[in-house]
Length: 317
Image 1 (cartoon, rainbow, N blue to C red):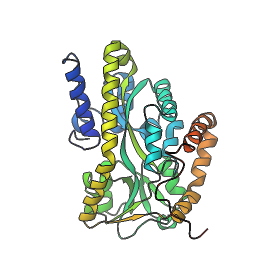
Image 2: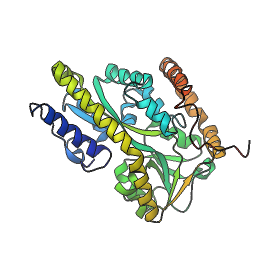
Image 3: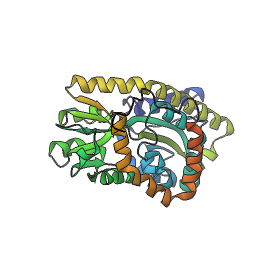
Image 4: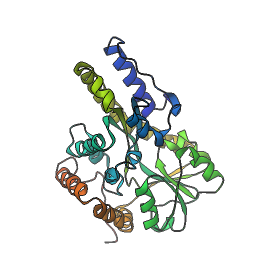
């Protein structure tokens, strides 16, 4: 990604500058702009092996190494902002479970989490508020859970890099794509599509992480510095994310795109068609799922997370 990209690019730039400044430049961090060394699906192995010291990737890429953490991608489990913020907080019980698994299984230590917004579906000439509307349609997916969601609801999943979405829509190799709102301006999807359906069925979370051996080579003072700066960067970018998302949607509308939200009935229909995805996950990862969902259940009793905001009434049930 570009260092100027408002979500991840700017966060990395701030992290680099703050660490170097506060360490009196005894620590130097080089950021390889636009994935010049390793692209997103190579970053985990590159950092784990020590080929580079730090990296950034989506949780769905981590899930290729640790399938159990794909629970963050489960449809409609985390579909409103207050809940997501509570889950990804540095003090969150749920986040601690995921971070611990990443360290134990991959050998990299998570420094901070960062959002790229929630998942949406971008299409041309139609909205996708009802799951039946994707039946038989070629839909871009990423990550195994996305594939299962699309298939369960009748779509034809096509796993494709974000770099290729624009051309695939333009050349009619795809009918629609699952992505997050930054892709609309960054991948120029507004030139090849005209509709956004805000299913918001799962968050798009990325993590910045460091090789554990590299981490242990740092002094306790340097480790404290890294943690403090990571927390600062994470807090700043998370606080700005709502504003940035709003600006991206404003951009999309200005380019002539229509934006659709799901009603409570439509959310229920999407939940119903995708319910088998979560069932399969729980059967495949019973121990992790139990620990995670117990923590999730406790969180959902808290005032922040018991009810989604602006939740309307059902009309069909």
